[in-house]
Length: 193
Image 1 (spheres, rainbow, N blue to C red):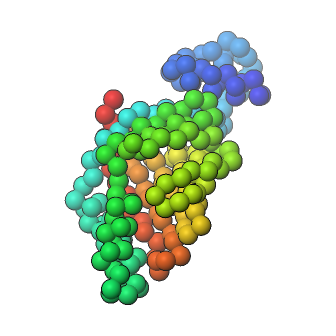
Image 2 (spheres, helix red, strand yellow):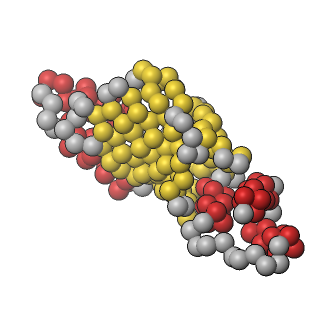
């Protein structure tokens, strides 16, 4: 069984179609059962759908929803700091113009704007440094979606990437001790490669 999983991963990473992968499995083991729905085959197909370069195509509705989420989350702050907090929060969570996702076995290479990181899917969190200080970052596949989680001393940010045809939907949720509500919104990207 372990050999089959390894073969699926290697063949998929080599860029073979799922039909070619299924044919190769049939040649290796003619008695083999088909993979269960939602199993490794689904994860490979999902990873392949996410791979590539994506260009931001945020709609006006998405921009407005992000603005409203920030306004609602900062509403409990004193009036003296609300405007500054909204401005800083908008800068921190604004979607980047480009996203690139690549998979190599169990490792995902993610480039968002000018920031790049490699993470082992389901592996231990990696320490990263940014404007907000140090944080722990991890990655996992949740069915067809890639989920990146960043945990810092003051909060947590979860970003989910889901691909459909030539579109990428990025959902972001951020919780911090300084805000009364989480900031949650989504952005759209179009395939650029």
